[in-house]
Structures are given as C-alpha cells and as structure tokens.
Image (cartoon, rainbow, N blue to C red; front, side):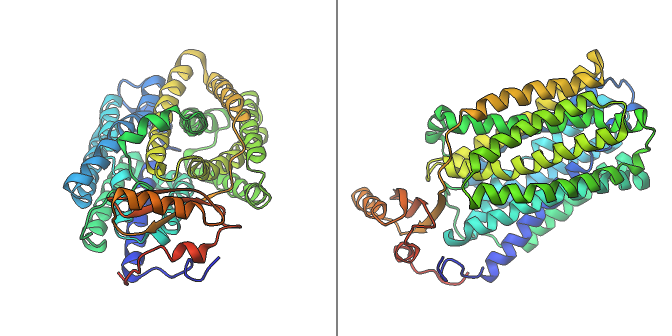
Length: 462
C-alpha cells in the first residue's frame, strides 16, 4: 500500500466528512430510538391494532424506498444542499405530526412523511462532490460506521429517553435533531463549486437494467431486504414480550439490549477477520445466514425462559451485525466498477422495503396468529435467503479504485481503459470520457498502486 494512497484528508474533506457523517448519525439516531419503545407506547393510542403498529413502524421504509432515488436525481439538477435541507424539513414535519398524534393513524401519517424526506442519495452525492476519488472509499466507510454506532446507541438510549420524555418527546427530539442536522449542512458543510455525476455513489438509469438482471447482486438485495425485514418484524413484538411475559418495564429494556449487542459485536469480529484475511467470505456469509435461521427458531421456541430468550437475542445480534457489515462490501465487490452507485441504490431501496414489509407482516401476524408466529415467519424467510445465499458465487477479493484522469474523447478513453486493464492486479477498468474518471476493480495484494496513481491528475489541496 503506497504512501500516496494513505494521504491525509484535506481540511475541506475532514470538515465535509465529519459534518455529513454527523448528519447521517443524528438522523438515524432519531429514527432508531423509536424501535425498542414504540410497540409499548402504541397501546395507549386510539384505534390501535397490532397490524397498525407494524404499519407505523414499517411505513417509513416504504416512503424512503419510493423517494430516495428520485430525490438523489433531483439533486443532480438543482443542487445537493437544497434537496438535503428540504428533506430534513419534511422529516422534521413528520416527526412533529407523529409527536402530536393521539391516534395510531396519525402516527402512521407522521412516519410516512418522515420517510418522504429521503436524503441518503443526495447526501452521499454531496460527500462525493467534496472529496477526492483517492480518499472516497475511506470517507464512505466513516459514514457507514456512524450509522452502525447510531443504531447501537439508539437501542440503549430509546428506553432511557422513553422514561424521561416519553415517545412523543422522542419524536419532538427527532424534529430538533433534524434542525441541528440542517444547520450542519447549511453552515458546516462547504458548498461544492461543481455538481458532478459520481458513478461510484449515484444512480445511472442506463445501468439499472443490467443491475436488476445480475443474479449475484439480486441475491445480495434479497439479503438486505430479509435482514431488515427481520429487524422490523422482531421489534414489533420483542418489547411486548419482555414487558408482558417477563414483567420487565420498558425503562429497563436497555439493560437487555446493551449486553447482548456488545457481546454480539465481540463474537462477530473473529469471523470478519476470517472472511477477509483468509478469503473465506462465502463460507462465513452463508454460515451467518444459517445462524440467523437458528436465531429466529430460538426466538420462536423460547417464550417461557428469560435466559433462553437472551441467548436467542445474542445469537440474532451476532449474525445480524456480521451480515450488516458484510453485505455492502459484497455489493461493492460484485458490482461492475462503473455501476457501483446504481447497485447500491437498488440495494438501499431493498433495505427500506424490507423495513416496510417486516413491520407490516409482523403486526398482521401478531394480530391474527400470535406473537410466536412472527418469529416462525422470520425463520421461514431467513431459510429462503439461506437457499439463495448457498448458490451464490464465491466473491472476488477485489477493491474499487477511482482515478481522476481528466476529460477526453471516446477513442482516448477506450485506449486508456485498455492500458489500465493491462496494469498488474487490475481485473476491470472502465473510463468515462466526458466525466474524466476511471473506475477500476483491483486486487490490492497484486496491484501496482504506484503505477495506477500516476494516471491521476495532480490534485490541489481543497
């Protein structure tokens, strides 16, 4: 690995990365804090049914899935910041509606409006506008870590805040956090001088058909759909189970989630190392899906014993954390180098649809067939994923690399792509002439990175 590849972030890049990672984290924190407490709060609302509780949890995912790609494309036309600020305002409006609602239908409307402020694609595009190609993988990883940390913190913080300010207070806090995120975007994040399409982060419609026909990518889309379906459906009933079956008040639920999540993270780490360092990605991945099936069966069969349920929850979090960390990496390894953004767009849409279907199905099953049916449904869905995952190809151990090569004509771009493809360690090279960018898939153990970096135009400090 070269010194040039490890070049430090510039001042603008640090400011952008910290600011936009903060925006992601603040926004996701507000959303995730509802998950461990909403099912209990919903019982106090007028017109409540378990199905409507599940719909209130999941409807956010549906509107996110519908609006995230169109709003990302709109940001290409009118600018990133206007779309992000408007999205945060819509998100805050939905939070206020949910906070003031006295009926379950009102909360459903509020949650749907929250999801309509879908800013993920525009935020990633802004991050790409303000960072160099050579450091973009690093800054995207920082954003990914922030989302994971937000989920962990929210699972602990949600029950504590519920005791102090209640679920309406959490919705109000979420609206305030959206305002804080807006201030960060407005004042803390620079405005790009040039909006540019980034095929490693954004959707390209002409590639959509190819991505949807790729069976390996579809297996991964099914995976993230299933993983978040299980997350949403399980938390339609888990808080109720702890309170009603084991007489544990909601304020104490953080004492359950914190240790099992920490132990789950600890158990995950060795398998991540084995998957990457020893190139056993498929074996570890398929085994984790199998463990997820086991976790759902354990949740299904352990309604009477608290410690058995705790064990089942630890098994679930171990598999969940491992798969949540592995899936984006697999999408990046599997997708064509210039279609990574399109592949990730479909992947994210699948993730949000999983939240919607999981919430709705979990609520309906709880209402009509009882609490245990939710876990049995989860086991069946996870088993379907296991069959699909078992037939996946062993992923190549390749990394994405983006080079700023300068605009050129099509003939020169084709010649450069051929030349780059001949560099040792380069598995695939695509040069986009009018964008002046080369997208590569490389084996970092074999790639001549010094040679590749020589094709990049000199960059000045931002």
